[in-house]
Length: 222
Image (cartoon, rainbow, N blue to C red; front, side):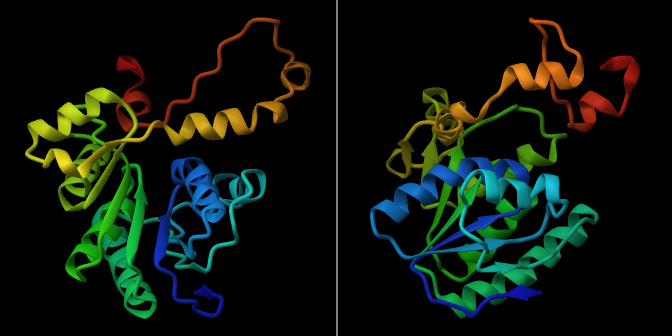
């Protein structure tokens, strides 16, 4: 485990995968500007440099206070390892609030551990739904919202989804989408001409990323 000296912090951010980093950057920056004490726990769910380290550099994220180095594995194996490591961190740090992001295994693991330690949880990007329970992410996000004391919502319809699932309205707060904040903060870094030249692309092109099993595992149905 790669660890710096533990510093007790009222707010602990749990980040594990590429989407978490993009969502967390503006939240951490805003809390820093407000003078909040914070710590960042990187679970190591994504560990490749291009899936992890590069985002800390390019988005100006603070170096993680700890990297649990969990790595890959089956859902049960990975989630169990995450919970063991996170329980140790939360017990050591005694946070007043744990902030989780999105819908990855690190998200649900942190929410479960915090709830059982009676630590309040804030879920950034709460209430989003695909209504496809074959997606592990859908399971993660639904359960995380049930465990969260603060459901920080990025779109109005998400409040309705939470209400339909019995989440008290007082726990839901429409705060906007931090992904858009990250986009706007980094617009000046985009060099579209350089990208087109590097890949021999025409003036107009479409870029799509596909990673969900339903999109890529069965070519005939994609």
